[in-house]
Length: 216
Image (cartoon, rainbow, N blue to C red; front, side, top):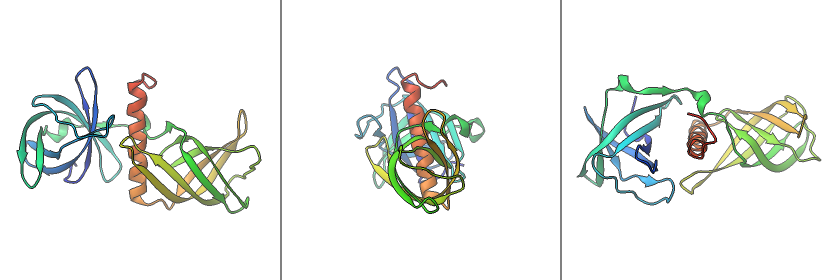
C-alpha cells in the first residue's frame, strides 16, 4: 500500500499544526525512512524533533488516499540524511473518502479552446476536481453542451511550484442562473496529471480546514 517513492503529507499534531511534504526513501517492518521534509508554509527544509506526533497522508497509485498516525523515532544517514518514522500496521490506516477532498472551490487560471463553438478564451475556475472543473464563462462567450476541445490548467501548488496540465475535455452542462458556468469533464487525461490534480485538491482541502472554512 505505502511504497518507496510515494509522497507523504505530514501534519504536526502540536498546536502549530505545521504541514510538511516528504518522500518515502525506504521501508522496513516497523520503520519508514523519509527525506528531510519541506515546510508547506515556508518551502524550507524542516528539522523534526524526535517523538513529535504526526498525522501522515498519502495517495496510492490507484488514487485512493489514506492517513495514519506516526511519530519521529530517530535519524540516520545512508546515501543522504533520513528521518525515521514509526510504521504502524497497515490495518490501522484510515481511508479518506474522495468526496472529502476531490472537488474544491478554487480560482485557477485556465485557457480553453472549444471546437464546435469555435472559440478560444482564458478565464478562471469556480471549482476543481481530478475529473473535471467548473469554468466561469466571460460574458461574450456562448458554449453548448457536449462541445469538446482542449485546455491548459495552471496549478499553483503550496510548495510554490506551478504545474501546467493539458488535456482534452467535454462540456457536460451549462448553468446560467447567477453567472454562466460550464461544467467540464476531463478526457484522455494523463495519469501523472490526475495525480497532480488529486494532490492540488487535497492541499486545498487542508488549507481550507486550517482556516476553518471546511469541517473535518
